[in-house]
Structure formats: structure tokens, C-alpha cells
Image (cartoon, rainbow, N blue to C red; front, side):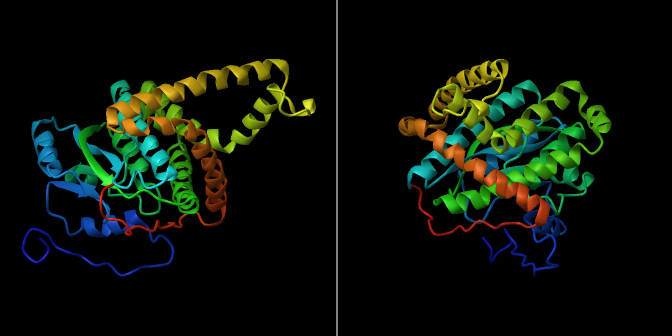
Amino acid sequence: MIGGQAAKLVLRHNGAKRGKTKPRALNFALGFNRGDIIGVLDAEDAPERDQLLKVANHFALADSRLVCLQGRLDFYNAHRNWLTRCFALEYAAWFHVILPGLARLGFALTLGGTGMYIRRSALIDLKGWDAFNVTEDADLGLRLSRAGLRCALLDRKTFEEATKTPLTWIKQRSRWQKGYFMTYWCHNRSPKQLLADLGIWRWFGVHALFFPAIATFLFAPLFWIFWCVAAGLVARQDLAPSHGYSNAIGVLIALALPTDGAIGVMAVEKSGHKGLKRWLPLQLIYFAMATLSAYKAFYGLIVNRFHWAKTTHGDQFSRS
């Protein structure tokens, strides 16, 4: 209710050209907040109806070290086309398999940017969001972990609008990847301090999460070439790696494909997207696009690292 006392609408005028980012706007709004718990939801999102009650109950029963809850993200237009289906499969794997696994291992959780709730006191202690990071959610998750605080997953969904065209997807994904580059770089400027803050186990978890997420897509073309040579699809043997490396690459591919497939099957079962199981083979094409976005992200990191490439939303409001 905007017109009554339940909510207050705050408008912010654009500031300087440098740093027109979502976390900058969040920091501005933080000064108006007086509640104990701060929630972040994007304008086009549709959280489950009882989500706020679940959040309040969860925090009320938790110890003081639990300062952040991340809801599971999904899409209300998941069945719009092949791209939204593949996007929904990726989110299902991330929020129903991978993040729960990271939580059970005690690793730092990279937050989702929406459907996220945090104790105001903890956010104030951390001096808010990094105003220049274009994945402020991933950065905040690491900073909370470095401060010795815990995040947990909330068993409630927030439905978003999935991007529907490859160009829009690449634009959005390149921002996410650029933000991962920035976050990983910033937190590793002092490796010894990072290790001291996290301890060896969580320090290992940060590198195990971020480095493959960055390097896999940047070096994917090399793996494709080596695989094609090893499979006899390319005659240029001078392009092939040495026999030992070729065997290692073959083993990696042989392990990666069934592992990804198993994660996908688990994800559709846990997320309620069983009808998307037949779309799992298209994930190979879907993730190939992430290589294009990774190079776009790397270029953006050099020429315009703080630019927030805003994703167009709002042309679909009914769940499909």
C-alpha cells in the first residue's frame, strides 16, 4: 500500500555519470530505512505470497550470526521460448542443487540480487553495498562471510522475468560476468588477508567457485578445438595438445558432461520444472553463448568497468 503508511516511495535523481548502479541506489535508500530487516526485490518480481512471513519467522528463530536469507529464484515466463527454458534450467540447478551444496559445505554464498533479506545492523556495519560493483550481490555474500556472518537459503521462490532474446541475454550475462571478475579481483588484492578472514576451507571455496566461473567460458574455445582434434573432426594435428594434455582434456570432458546432466536432472525434480527435462541437451548451446558474453565482459572490464548495462523488463507480467 503506497498511499497509506505501509510503504513509502522514494525517487532518486540520477547522479554523476560514473557509478549509476543498482547498489548506489540501494545505498541511497538505506538512509531512509528504519526496519530491522531489509528486503531487496526488483520491480518486475513476483515473490510467493507468504515470503515475508517466512522471512520474519526465520530470523526470529535464528541466532545472531545468521544475518541474510536468499530466496530461490525462478521465472514466471519460463516456457516462453527455448532460451527462457534453458535459463530456467540454469536457475533450477543453481538455486536447488549448487547453492544448497555450497551451504552444506560451509562455503560463502553468492547472493541473487533479488529475493534477498538482510539484517539492517549487519549491512550498516559493512557500510552498505559496494556502489561501483555491478554484481553487488556476489560481493556482499563474500563480505558477510569474511566478517564471520552467515547466509542461508529461504525455501520460498521469487519469480523473475527471464530475458527472451540472445542479445538481451548476452548483455545481461556480460554484466554478471564482469561483476564476478571485479569481485574476485577486489577480494584477492590481499590474498593473505582473505585467507585470514575466511580460513583455509572457505578460502578454498571462494576460489573453487569464482575461478572456474570466470576461466571456463574464457578458455572454452581452446577446449572445443582440442576436443575436435582429439575426436578427429579437425585434421590439423598441429593444433592438438600433447598426448598427456589431450588425455586429460578428454577425461575432463568425459566427467563434465554426465555431471552436468546429473545436476540438471536433480534440478528439474527439485524445482518442479519436470516438463523441462527434455530441454537439457540444449544447455550445450545455451552455455556456448556465455563464452560470447564472457569476452564482452572482459572488454567492458577494460573500457568501462563501472557501467551498469540495464536489462529491459516489464513486457510480461503474467506467469506462464
